[in-house]
Length: 179
Image (cartoon, rainbow, N blue to C red):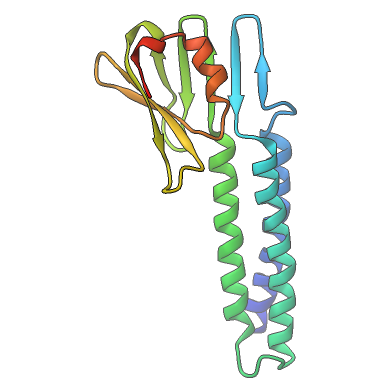
């Protein structure tokens, strides 16, 4: 049981370090880049760095609570159980950070490409858009997404955490926008 505790303690310390490395390697300095031929929009660094910080805090908290279990503060609770909870939470945060950090929209002169959270990058020409409509992601409306539908039935979604209004100016198809 001691070997398992040591391995889990090491993993609890390593996962936040992986989150920091993931943030340093995969993220831009500027999330909204304007170039001559295209504009790139990505999820704000505040979001991914917050997930990274929470991951670090959960690592520290996991080690502290498992140590308190080991010295008997919480009675007969096995430290491995608490460490497995915190480790699984850290791994879930690491996956969330990598998925959210992957999302981006690139607008060109005549089309856009969307790299979704999961899956292949999708491209859509502005001239092919037949419908654009807003959709609230959650009840209460604090995140509103933009869904685009093309002539061939394909669709893409632009997550509301990005600057949708700026992208709408680039798309310039307000006649198909449903309010």
